[in-house]
Image 1: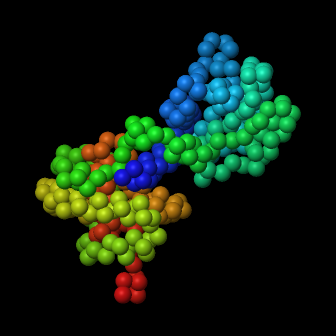
Image 2: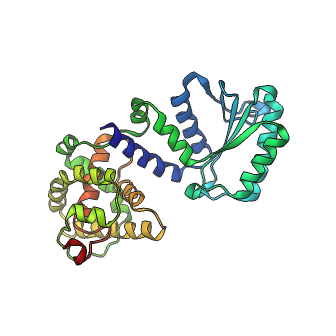
Image 3: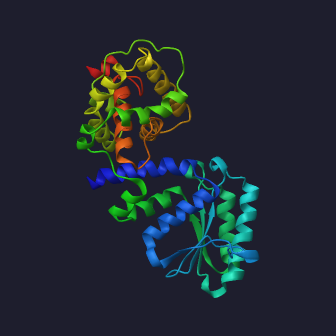
Length: 307
């Protein structure tokens, strides 16, 4: 199961970093780095008038100073970012002197792309200050997470739901998972739920990965319990409103240009998952699978594809 645990954890991590900014991004990077490098990494905090000596973390073996930059919504103001690189890199050189052998700009930017001007600025300062330098992006941090021991990944991001977890789904867990959806759904009833498309055909048609296929196959074992829960609600229009909410969120994800597997992850988060709590994540996966197989989310294969 470790391969599927890793896929689930990476999915959660990618979605988490999308919303991290400022101190929260810095703290999360420090936690990951400390989990991976142990005593070789020291997270730093500001102290008095001298601040943090232009360092958010120091790796002893490589002499690397890490400086974090997590702008709001992952949108870099190039002018501000250039000024930060200049101030922080020069400041690190001033404070750390010969101890500084490498400088890393740890960035959390939208779509994981670094503006060319920032790349050029880092390279220019690297030559001027005679210090190796570069950037550490979301994908680089994700690779650090992949390098963590399995137990550490579970501690930080939980584990993937198992088929045995589906057996233990309770109405209480389903209710907690659905609470967030109720806050976001439209009030008008949706059209009648269509018949389910073949799961495997729909997965292929939507270009979903083998990992997502696996998660859906696990979630499929919990669909009946979700149906029972919805059927037992006092409001008969509850399932239709839930379907409307899922459809609306799915359309938002498609409009934003997310890839299919990322959309699947967003839908799990929307269903109250991504908490690293096995019970709630399992309930969320069952809920998303229910709306997947009833064709409320993702595209329905054309008749020619099914045949």
